[in-house]
Length: 170
Image (cartoon, rainbow, N blue to C red; front, side):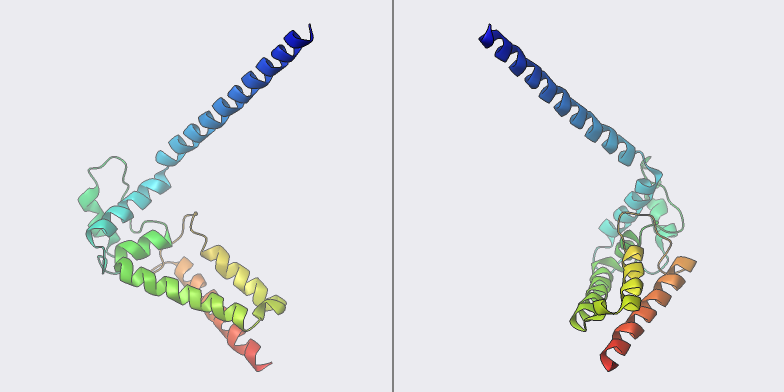
């Protein structure tokens, strides 16, 4: 009797594990379908296609709207005035060279923030946190070259640079 109870218990555990695996697999599949059919991702696909054909120097500032229409026939691409993600926009408009310059600039600011121990100043930490939220890659953004988003981003960046530079003088 003991053996059969253990056997039943093992079978229940196995079916429970199997149902958990099926649930996880189904959840991943549903998440993939949502991402695949997202209109934001369709914007990003357009930017990536423009980037693929203009890898090194990009298509030029604010040319996404005209370049993207070359790929409009693809049903999974939406073309608007910009790809709604600053990283995809940088890649499509400035190519890998402009993108690397931007990444180096952001890395330099972050390095200086920690090198000069600005994390000890509450105001600097708040500005740096806002700066990082503007850079979060998995959210839609305004255009980096022509919207209010760009104005606010560069305003925060200049305030952060001022805070970093001013921290050294104290």
